[in-house]
Image (cartoon, rainbow, N blue to C red; front, side, top):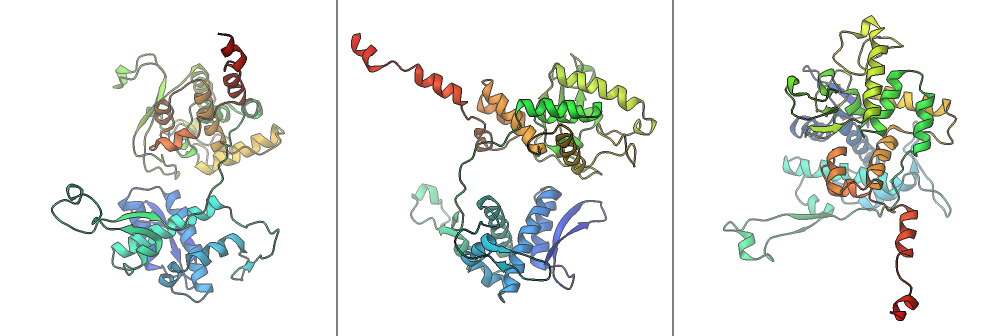
Length: 384
């Protein structure tokens, strides 16, 4: 079982799961196609889900279970995920014994379980799996214990579900790039385009898919953009979800506006001069294009951003390798430290849930000490 990329005649791509005979697994393919086309999720989401589902189906196959029976033994699957390291040509070697580090962490395992639950729920709804599997995965209750007003006139079964299988994930601070690391990256960049990429992630909070999907029409650098049909004042850019030829994809369906500071505007101006010296790059509507390697003028794929940041980290001689998302985390953390409210952070980062933005509201240790020192001592209170 393995994940496999599929390109439809329309050019839309999604990932599916193939068996050992290179045949499509029908239940998995039906679900992943629905995820991409019916629910408008990104290609990368289907890739992640396909990899997780392939893991589950390989475990079922290796233990001689039909996947329906595998759903009923998720506890064993979780143990396998924790301790089995797959190797070429083998079903996996169980690493047992005290002191053995887990192969996969709680966060990764919970992600796999989410994909499996979604597959099962879709298969049950489509009639491809028995309904008895849902209570195995979820704590399910009907509406009989609810008030009559909540049940309504039609006393039908109302599913209230909570996942039964979920590992505890230790709370950890946001893994952000420090301001010193960002400055070092900027100094290590070899071109104006690369500096623009770092700044748009670290000072505007763009994801790499949003970054590589930017079009020239999305960037408004004038004080007044009304002649362009845009009522948003001052320099800003628009993040818009589109199907792009380079595979870039904005995660949020909702369009958002991100203001640009003077550093962002200067970076765009410098990059525009650099790009103007490359004739093959003039016709592309994409903001970020290949300037230094073939095919010159083609839009940069999201994976190239990872390569760029990794190379800059190495040239800057940083103690650790910086990842693109750590630059976005730096933007969110700096917003919170500057006093931005939760709704402002949500809007600027394009989060749909407040919980996604709340992780940035971590008080700085110095601010915590100041808060304690502002509390009057008992002796001072007694004197009054």
